[in-house]
Length: 427
Ligand code: AMP
Ligand code: GLY
Image (cartoon, rainbow, N blue to C red):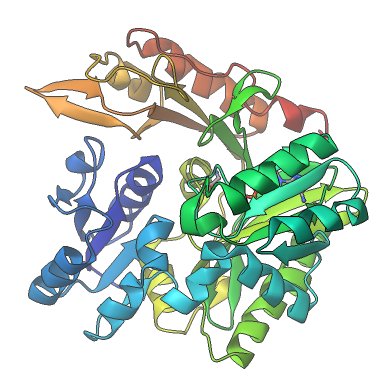
């Protein structure tokens, strides 16, 4: 057991609030810092006025303050090499190095690793010229999936229903530069049917501890209608991810990927987020991310019974003992409350009331886009809050989360009313 570590968390969303919250509940009591954090992390950690992508300022702070561990939330600093810079100063980091983060940063690299490792994934091909991509369309059928290679803020994937849509998307990415450098290379990919799930694998380069599967809700409206968002809610465990699926994720996805990376001289330490499609073609990987998912983290970490910091430090030091990771029984649900207009344009500075009342009911309210203005909690983003409840079973957790949501008010707040509904089809 480790006591009283000094820990720096990088990021400012609901995910980072959940990481800070879980760390704050570890035995022993850590000293927590969050860069830059939000109004939620401010209650549990010292927020630092340093942006998550300001690598020089983060490194300067870390050199001066020597945290025992740095936990990097978002992908951008990981892909930019924050881990490498901090490790060069002799510091411990939970989060993969730059080369390993390419599993998220380059879909072509990720596919190449998956193919070499024999990881089940959709058939695909990469292109830099639109003519060649269009000529290859026939081999993929319809619908066809078109993906920008690089980081495109979650917008780089287009599912084309018709050949005309596919050609337009290819031209937009390769000829019109819609995603800039991120879209200078594209993938065409076979469309897979099924249901998605997210599995977080804690990795120390070699060993793996899987956390229970979660399911995100990407579309803004009930019934998976409307535009895509950063995620409108999540629940765990996801019954679609049966024990057989989880076994496949460990044995056929994560371990072979870590092995293939080691062959290439790359050690993956941190969380490997496996975005899965489970359907008629079995378990396939849609994507890897090099970080925890948001809002999945807001249900998965509250379901972790064991302390978080010792596990993350063990990953960082290459000595993870998966047997020390304990999962609490029961289920967890989180409902995102979004600003009016989200995922389009939305106002900020709307006063928020009722978070204490929701917490009094036993919910945990994670802040995503909030700020404190003259002592008043106000909205400061599209996804504003995410309200988590745990329960003995999924039904209890859903009801408790929505009871919490009902206590919280800000002008024009909107949220989905069907979070976890899909799960009940399997139960
Ligand atoms: P990605 O960023 O690769 O996960 O893609 C974003 C979303 O597009 C996924 O969450 C899926 O909903 C969808 N998607 C991506 N690839 C495929 C595929 N091969 N077949 C069906 N849907 C996909
Ligand atoms: N919830 C999906 C993601 O974090 O990418």
